[in-house]
Length: 267
Image (tube, rainbow, N blue to C red; front, side, top):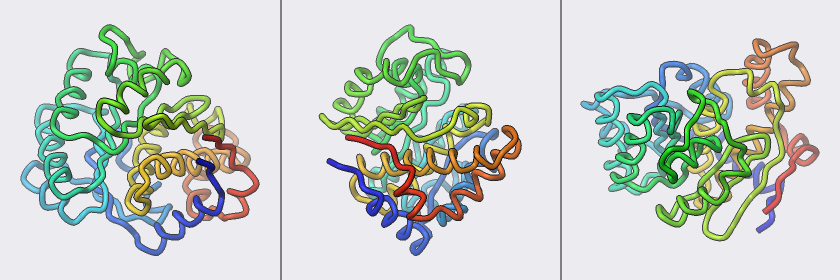
């Protein structure tokens, strides 16, 4: 398939018009960042973690984003409960396996969650994606030791096993589903100096899934928008601190013209 700026822009307009509710069970480090990014896109984020209410929230949500960045047994139970409910209701799930491979607990938790329900999208860096498939692959904390390109084979294995799209973030972002492979070359190196950018990418995948029934296309569109907003922000920033500010502004004020001029995506 061929990605078009018109299709990306159509999704953005749908997000702004519908203001979809995105349920996030995410980590302490990025809650504020990802909530503000979703708001800037036009979505309505909710960060509900208590096991007593996650089922109720999922029932009214348009997508569920699960992020294992700051794990605890209590939160894992909430994640499992939310994923079961989303699966019953047919609500798309995004799973971000933050730090998979760094510890046995993290890798085991990802496997447990995948046994509960198959996500629509798994989004992680190269090491995280490879660690889910290959025992012994390690990450540097939550940072990748492997390039996105090196994880493409592992992404295909995961996609085939769980019937989902796998998004591998890196200098080049790849989205893999079935026999399809999308390559997104938008973005800026300064984005790696801001915590939570990967988590934000996962959240945006959830946002785009809420308006686009094509999982492959929705994930690719999310990465395109993420990268273009990062480029626009970097051009106005002196460093990582101001990049965070300008990134939100860029998401909020993104135009079709900017997408047409900047989009670098192939499939």
